[in-house]
Image 1: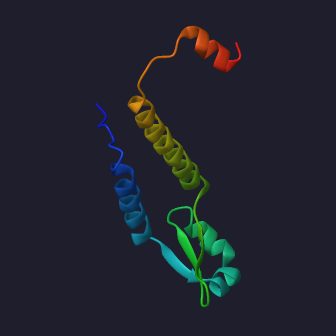
Image 2: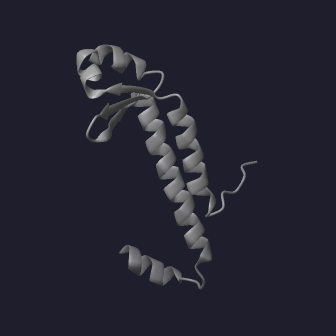
Length: 105
């Protein structure tokens, strides 16, 4: 059985995932990345690579396509959970006629 996520939990979950994720991140300067792109792209297949710049600090993070897809899916799932939670708070009923009219059916 899945545990229900309370509305205040997503930010805590996201923060904890971020901390876990950044703990294994490989930091490189922009110059290092330019000189060894293929090596760092290969590294990014198993762990994130953080590209930094002297003046701007963190510039980019390179991740594998699989990680990116999972991260986008997780954000979409979180948005769905929050939207469902808001919908559960709504009161009142909508008649079938009102629903059909609203949906243009």
